[in-house]
Length: 184
Image (cartoon, rainbow, N blue to C red; front, top):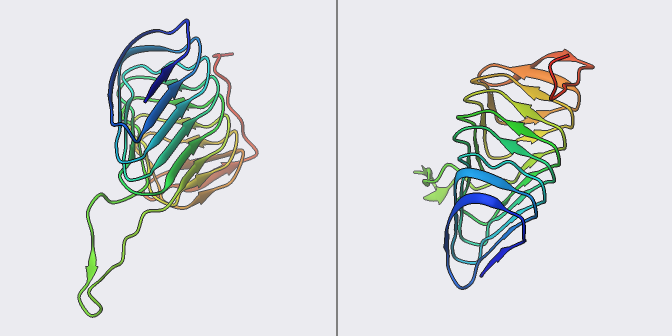
């Protein structure tokens, strides 16, 4: 099932099965965005988003939600291959090359128990977060509001609100900061 609201000026490509849904809000634009929703996945994009060349893939009951006024510059990927969720709050800014994923996309097996040890985990990105070029936001990551993730950083855990985090893995290097879309 597809659902598009009016006033979208976009080049959006869809691949959606009968059990899945994609909803894109009003006044969204895209240069060359791709959405794939399979096996009961749900993808929701709020109003007034700039999607750029966003690539979204969700399957197996996964849920992806993008808040109001988010901007995706260049090729950004949101990947949900299992039953978990990606939540992105309002007014976030993603630089090109950013990846957000809820799983490793392949199983890692404990040879003693023969059980999988790398299950999917939700990703939560609060409102007004900025990720630098090439950042990776991996399963289980939680990023608080108004935070900044440096270029090339890998986030695997919790980044509090109003912080600057950089590195591999990302570590907080400054607190009590915020960012502005405008260069002032």
